[in-house]
Length: 461
Image (spheres, rainbow, N blue to C red):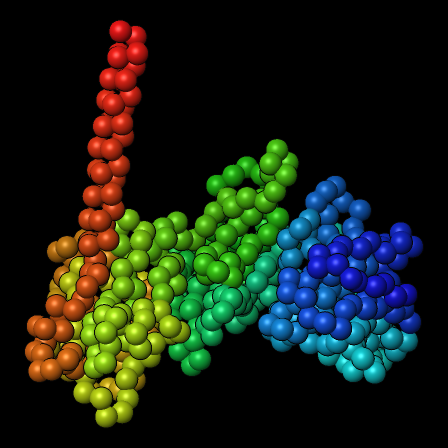
């Protein structure tokens, strides 16, 4: 069966004979789409659906315009929310045609022109007879005895559905757009945690641990929360929903990196979060761009300083936030810029104990991979970072100092103090400007009111 897509956004429902809850072997469906690239193109044909009350689950063959190419994938939707995607980790780019087939020998395949295979389940010769979409949203291949030979639940993406289990050492992953970073939600023996990943770098920014140091064997999403179990299948902890409505899924946001539990609101006709791991903007790992500081008013201040030839006073490489900036290696002379009342939300950074601030500063300065260090004068501990992200303002008197590696000197023979003078937008400055704007707005409002009142009195007279 062929379907033709010529609209930038098009959703097709294949005849009821095919949009059932199962597809037998030797069935093939294909989508043809324009040869010319159309930005924003999103074509979708639903192949399977469950007969639950809305919103129900549907499986679709999709074609989407991504980065100048067309991506072909098999997806599962809960209402309008994509909860599973065959191309989540590796896109299958194709042209002219996107085809899915459950072959005679039981292999589910996505293909492009001339039969090029871009994705497959690898289940040939295992007795597969049908592709089914279960009421849980699990897309499965089963044999004649209804035994599962392959299931989408074993290949989690960025969503965990009700009833789904994640064993220890498994994770969800999401990818921020236009970034070389990723977020992961990982099930570990002693905790569940959120991580920011960039290349070989990995920092956690949120965690939840069972009490009494009990070990986790697996996690399962129930109606009231994410339940953690021990090796004896005994419940040992739960991340609970704050609403009475049953949960439908857990999701790791691809833009914020926040973890949420979601229920369906019939009144609003949409999914809403009943729990979020991080409730403050400044606790998000990429709330600000690299070399930015998240302030008390949830705005971003850029750590700015002059370098040779930099007339914009705009930070490293003439910009706050061009990629994930790493440490400096090479012949450029560097020094450490100290920012008080500033901390980092990133955890699991390597560190040293019983060390002075100067030793902390020197250790980072002498390591070309170190981009910044966080020092606590209260416990005399130092933590080293290879990227300057996740930086936020904290209360004065916290004993924390954030040390940033910067190019030494700025236009002439500057000292360390002169470098500090070029920190043009430090923490608190943006806050002060906001307060001035608010006060100015209030003053303007009262002046306008007084003028209007005067005009009214004159008219009445």
